[in-house]
Image 1 (spheres, rainbow, N blue to C red):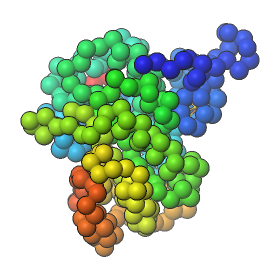
Image 2: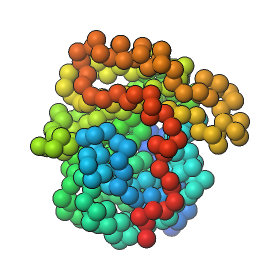
Image 3: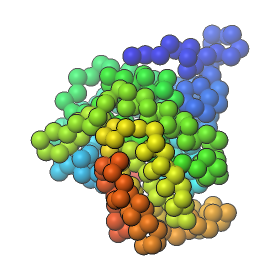
Image 4: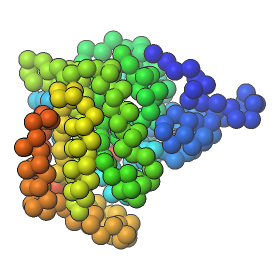
Length: 320
Ligand code: SF4
């Protein structure tokens, strides 16, 4: 269940009192993170920080159901996507609230008291040691959903084996150069493919309950970016070529919207194609490509979902 601590953290100086150097995620940046001190490309301490914990109804129907998904939004991120729809928390403009193991457990229990269908850990990859510590001692009545960027190592994911029932990873790029340009990582497709293989190894084919809720398996998400339709088709080809039919469900997201704060501050000026929403012709091209393929099963959003209203308020809801 647990990786050897040395696999992810090491004290580079040989001094046992020195902060552990973190190599938890594929970025392996070796930052001196401590319980309180934020460091590294994920800008995070070891103690988890959250910006919101609430029932969420904006996920796929098999995740949200009728009572909502018990969503825990963690702050910080080891990717640096220029278009991030959650930029306020991923870049720690809203650094969130630090939760001890006990406080995280209490937050989980409050979500369960609301009758949510599952517990949905959003972007928690850089907090795996604390999250697995808490999950390992809980007997949960609902599935745990691991909602991630897909940019994770198999070693990281093996720590979740037996603790996570549903994997909900992004598969952002089939085009390596686009991943480098927009998210700052040199190897997104190969890393995400290896991660997806490990997720599928752990959970096998998707299983639904009698209400159509996903209880086990992998649901892969891809956000269709305007002006990047070739990248989307590359992703579809990669998934088709590397996995047997029925290995996972696929969800194509059309909700990309340029975040006003990013556009107004000039942060999208080098990426003019990201200053607009998806056009109907682009959406149609993807839909035509997917519906004539007999390899994937899943969901596609219509264009009406492209609004900032889809983004929840990161106001500390559910954290006290
Ligand atoms: S989890 Fe954060 S500090 Fe650790 S290697 Fe990844 S980016 Fe660096």
